[in-house]
Length: 619
Image 1: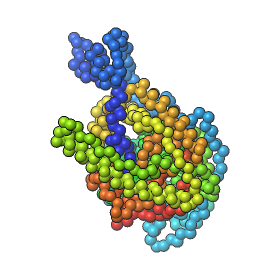
Image 2: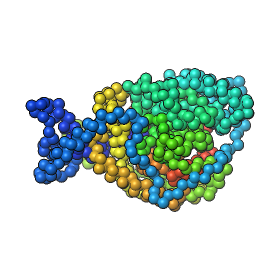
Image 3: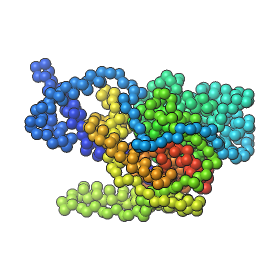
Image 4: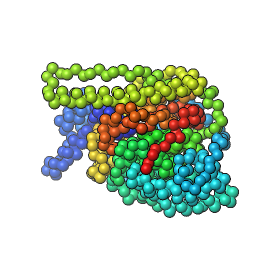
């Protein structure tokens, strides 16, 4: 099963505690001591504080060293206070830019006009809802030829959003007035022969971390329900320019974690007793339910991949630095990516073609080309697969009980073993679909080349995400407003932000240095092959989010009635995933800025399997 950010943090939460920041610890200890300070008894950093901080940080200190450090640490603590006096809203980025390219990498910058596929002939009946699950490419042809109107299509999707939101909880705000005005304008332009392209007149939904002028941008979080950002995000501007029609701001888990938001839990259309996963919860659910033609999501560590898997969508996480994030909530400046969630691969290509490229504001964006050609000969590509993802799954070794094990410890050990067995049974079942995918690729004439990810501690690098997120939302932690967030468990943002304050600046830099090694080593894979086939979960998800490589997530079948049941039944519980009738997915990876080739190969596989043509029964 794929890990979304909530699940990942649940597995790796120990990493933040194990690497504590010596000055950060001192600041916390000092803040506590400051509460009891007075003019008669002024606050000072003490050697006892240093001992506590050093023990937590794992830094050996000698007596003479501690004495030399105290003055500098008191000055450093004062520096923290001076910086905190500066107003730094979420949209202020650090004075550095992450570049995912390894040394010597070359970009393709020569741009060609896109070549779309020939649209299939679609008949239009009396019930326009029969078109709800058509692809963007199919709807575009109906709009271009005047067989339907943008206004009728928009009204149909608005009606579906209203009808199914009470069941699936995917809408934060309908942008109805804006959408109807855009639709009428699109119809007038198309009738006058001013057709802008395949997004002209197509209704879409935005993850509610994208600013849209005149409407709330809530970030899914308690305390931000009425936040209005008086601008349109660059992606919104570009989709407006392409003629697309924004019909809704869609849900995300609070501050881009999971599927829990201030209004409830967004649901999976294939099983409404499950959450849709996250954090692009609403975009994935609404697309799968046929309530928008496409949506824009974001990913930092699984937030397109996980909900696309859960809801059976096609999701593209572009190369880091391909799509500008201006006007989007910042969580991690070095890991955030915006990308489309659609019903098919070519729809992803259509959307990316309109939103990629520099905007002069997000300085991480490169002037690379996205040259889509529906007729590209994908058979010229070298295809690899992560062999270990498809190898037989070994049984877990049962933990040996301690000689002095108590009854409570025995109970906990047996519960862990039971969960491990259930998870293994689910993974064994799902691996059938992975292996069937390899067989299908071979039947398509693909000569699969086994490859492996470099052996590096990817999980140990991820605390840098929480460190950046804690900086992005520093004001929440320092004012106590983090109590307004809906979720407050040990794996949720409030606690993660607090833990991140103990993450060393030195260790943050060391993690990024390790990340540079990961970028170079993983990039070497794409000297051997052009595309890598992988399971949607596992190490690749963490690794490629750190290195900025693009990923394409495709529906890859549906679990049968014999599928193991989930470990939990509560909606929104991370363990309530899978089970009979729910989708599975497959992921394709490519080299940096090779997103068009990635989509070309993904489209060939998707057309050969047809899983994207299946849709949930909502009534």
